[in-house]
View 1: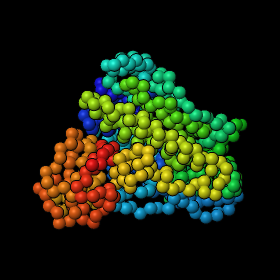
View 2 (view 1 turned 120 degrees about the vertical axis):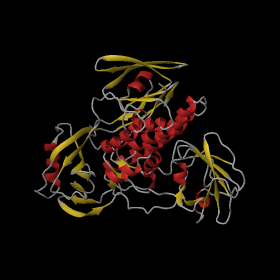
View 3 (view 1 turned 90 degrees about the vertical axis):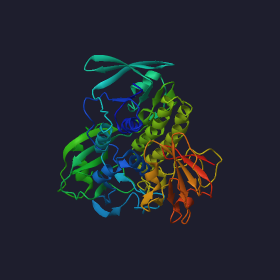
View 4 (view 1 turned 135 degrees about the vertical axis):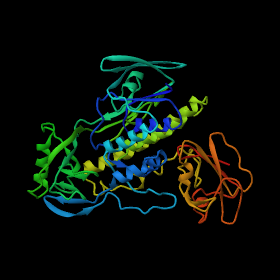
Length: 474
């Protein structure tokens, strides 16, 4: 076995798909006896949609989900208007998916599992990682399934096994941060058939007391809402408590909650692993960073962890381990920044700030960059590679994202009409202005969007990494 992944949530599934499509022998285990059934991380950010485009699951995610709903706000039992977390943004040539997409996490995971199965890999449920040891040649892992133990040798182990990560604890890596036991929230999935399911609802005592209320957001593909409400120390988590909040704050008597399909108690647990790597073992997702739900950042950050790590593990298995250290240096800095953003939004919510529910570009994760400090160019190495509409050699409309899709890197050769350079592991393609010709693989930048998006000059070459970030300019 080349890579063993512990934890089959969105992070582990994304990594398994990325490795499997590269021909890596991967095994994905999860200690839960059944697949998770609940909405939990129901917001998919634009950058994660771009990852899903590359992995071949975007169409299924878009078909199953829905745009972020309009929220109807009630304060003190009175309807006060409709609100959006963010106004919809029109797609641009560089950003084809600019808006948050809503889909319950369990449905996202099901789509990812189906995609993984296309590569002949299935999640092994009820299989717990018990212990492991590593040396220079690999990682020896002990697994347990129904009391039967199995010893597995893998070249690399990835712990995507959540905030209580066995992998992280076994490594002894500190999970630095804090847990606030004074603030507890009840999260769950519930039906409220008297409410129009095309809208979300916020029933609160007053605008400056948002924690005294309940929020319900419609989940696509059914009749359930995701619900969030405060949980005091003496309250019992359950349907009666949620009904009490609705009765007190909605100003309505016809809203009856039923079918509490999933429920959990959440408390602010804001933590960051001191290191994301120990030898041949890596941490990703919630095992490496724990977020408040505000801003919808946790699941999306884990997906990007996996997308960053997959191609680097594949190169290491091919004999080039030089990029493995960059996983931690790139992703830990991102996780720290995102934790700060999520915490700031949580503080605003608790304090009742007027813009506590507003979401801007900083939550969409499109501005995440691995550029070097002090590099202030418009498009620098480490930046996200933008999309652009172009035409292929046959005159058909395509996008740069179509060229990037797959496990390869892409070398964009702007204005190059001669023989294209060869780049190991990359697909070389010329990006030409209208009127230029070549017999080499090429696209035509009909409207100039590609040259503009990459701030590219004639003769410039840009290497786009397999994870969609700029790897080199020359």
